[in-house]
Amino acid sequence: MRVMEVSGTGYDSVRLVEQPRPEPQAGEVLVRMTAATLNYRDLMLAQGAPYRSRTGPYVPLSCGCGVVEGVGQGVTRFRAGDRVAPTFFSDWISGPSSGPLLSRALGGTVDGVAREYACFSQESLVSVPNAIGDLEAATLACAALTSWNALFVSCATKPGDYVLLQGTGGVSISGLQLAKAAGATVIITSSSDAKLERARAMGADHTINYRTTADWGVKAKAITGGRGVDVVLEVGGAETQAQSETALMPGGTIAGIGLLGGHRIKAAQGNNVRLDNIYVGSRDMFDDMNRAIAANGISPVVDRVYPLEDLAGAMRALQSGMVFGKVALQIS
Image (cartoon, rainbow, N blue to C red; front, top):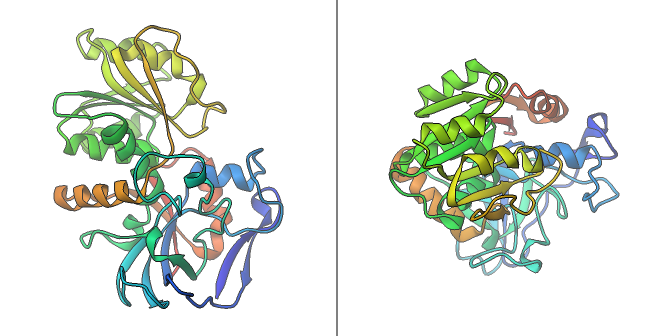
């Protein structure tokens, strides 16, 4: 089978190799991967981020979709022909997160989905909504689930709440779709007027160009009539946190997502601000989100698609910052 490996540091170390097709062991499911999508985490690991724990070659990417080809002894949750997606954290099934449950993450501590076939524990897979295609389903495991966790698990977003989203990457665009389905009022920022226009076409209620509006936190709060937003999906980390706090209502939540700004969110400077670092989500959250996606007819946004062997090109596209939604790989 074809497999993409990261053998060193940098995108030039991403290469196509051949490996034997795996066979499912007891409790395992063999999945023919059909699609995958990229996250900024994948770029950082390929570039040798300090938290990259593996020194040898590894298979990248955590988010994918595929079709069950076979099952090992004792598998009862799936059968051949089922469409499935693996969870980001292989061992986090339900309940709150903890260190041991987060130790095995696809595309990092364990090999990821940038390959034609992979075996997964039956407990680490979910069924994907029938109404969306494989490329769209491949967006769900990290970006969409992170948004779901932030909006509906960490918080309890309800109709009429104000949600502030930063940028138009995978997390923010899925957050836009999920928040609007819940009846929330969405404010979204970007440095691109063209991207903001696309966001408005998808239902964003208010948009702010943070290049031309330096105090975008003040602007966001003014949009709410001075009340402040209920929750901010903070993808900029410490670099943008002060603006997020300005926009927030007393007692509101900053949901810290990823490491795009180089540092996770830090202790709040103001009073009555709730901080919560979001670590994707559990399998149960994934199932809950998929039911919501199916019930609301949500179609995840894939901006551009590359063949498996051009993973390096897909990484460079995501790095460019020109993407609206997700960058995907067509595997088979």
